[in-house]
Amino acid sequence: MRLTKNLLALIVLAVGAVWALQGIGVIGGSFMTGQSQWLYIGLVAMLLGLAGLVWANR
Image (cartoon, rainbow, N blue to C red; front, top):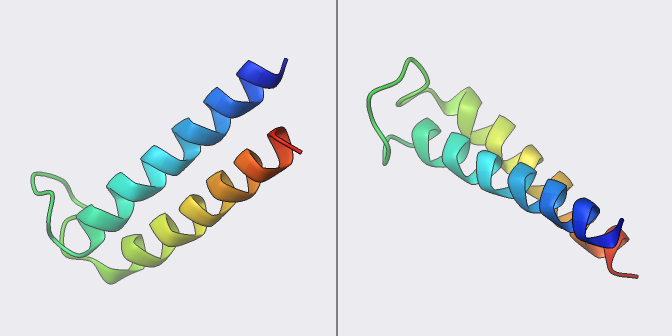
């Protein structure tokens, strides 16, 4: 169960990072590229992923 929680948290963290990078225009080729709202959504997702990692490993 702990492995599942860690994997889920890492996936959320990675998706958040991709969204944030698309939001600032580092990753192109999407409707999200260059739109700052995706930076903020990505940052929130990354924080949720980090919180999930902390929660899964306590």
